[in-house]
Image (cartoon, rainbow, N blue to C red):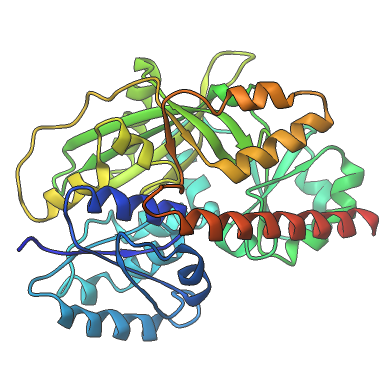
Length: 395
């Protein structure tokens, strides 16, 4: 009987991990805090609610140590969220006696989750990235912005804290008046950064993902580009295409190697349309939102990660299929609604994006409920976010 896998996360990313492993016959156990468990539980795993890694980390540790008794051998441990990644890194020594996993150095994990530390690491490694300023005191915004041009974006130091209040990765700031009006309010949702905007369309944003073993040898690689995101221009991918650009791929892999990653990791890059240079937008040391597209394109990263940890050899997976798209339906619909307001999209054009070879973020005929539950939740969260932003702009 093969070793089981444990996935800490029932978001769309975690569900993609579960399905990728289940497609290879791996028995998967999946845990998440109660709210996400209710929305994301799937028939492809034995699902159960668990303590919140942010507020009850010690309880979560005891929960996992108790769950270990269910398995005949140490299971492989994966996660698709920053909250659980930080938890695993914090308790890596105690967990490693009972679970199998690959993580980079603890400082790197902390730096990637805490964007202030990440900025310093990027600067130390001389990696080209957007100019970013740390907001230590939101009342001193004029001093902060002496060298920042508008429009710019406000983004959180800890993304998961910000998303509790706003279903947004960033907030676009058009001018100093808007910044003065809203910055203090946004700072109540968590610590903030202000970052310049890299000019260019959605299609200029690329993701390079890879798997490195414990010796930091490349075992698999995949890349794709965004075709649409929500919120428009500054959000998460809703329509993504598998493709290979050798220049982007090599730069992405080189950056990952500069960070000495192990396990599954990914970088997001954007090509500046004014000078053609690639800029680093972000890095993850876990599977990213649309990693399931890689599985569809014959680069099953979660399963290859599993094989790496059970010491089963395999040839490096470096030849992906191209031209297949990943679709997150509800956010893609919301993106179309937003673009129609500015006459950048028609319903006919949007309907055409639904055709062609597709990997759906959530929907499967033999497992439809996660798509329905999470889709309804996305609609509700989007309505709440827009209501919150409207109130802030009225003040």
